[in-house]
Image (cartoon, rainbow, N blue to C red; front, top):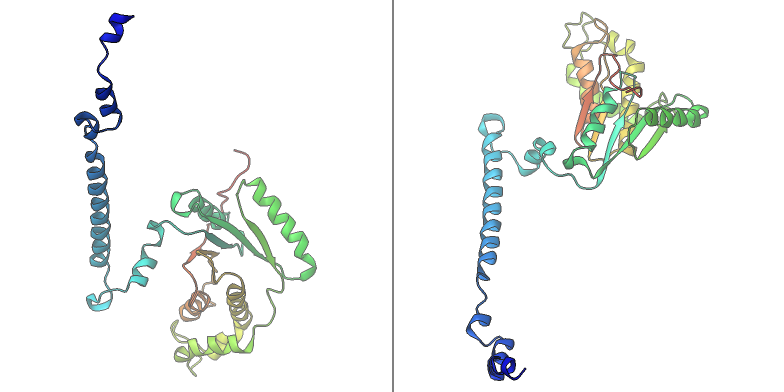
Length: 266
């Protein structure tokens, strides 16, 4: 025991190392390197972000090569950015095979849209059908294994649109109107407007419902209305779509080919 105690270093040497005043304790090997590595990594990330922003602004241009605003660039690159917590509103107006449901559901399974919940909107012609339509829609979604946040069935879809909304639509199509009843596919005749007044009212009413329910959505996905060939001119059809989407959040029209893309048998 005396021999082992005599082999120990003096007490002042032990105290010196314990206090960190020794040369080895005061300069731990390699300690500054991680800090320098982290700083350089942060600088590299900032440089890459600046380069990416610069490349986007150089990639997209307006008419005549004009520089686009930041808001326009953000709208163009919406699917490349991480979305904040919100909703994807799906307006399933017609049974097109389920593509209108499938695409937004696939979006929510990706990291950029994982913070967004699906809200499914459907239309009911009568208020007494509201509960039945809502239950059947929820049952259908559960069979398809579609993870959704809410199902909303809106009644009175065919109700007469407001006079102010009609006036806005009339102002939109005013320059395309003509008194000549021989339509050329571009101009709008009085005969066509009268024959399509019910469908026009439906699309005006649809915009009113969008304003009431989906103005805060991250993305709106809607079944694309299909016109009857030879009955609706290109100008009136595009006026419908333009009026529905005017001033709305990012909007995606989808139309399937009536073949089912959803199944609960697999």
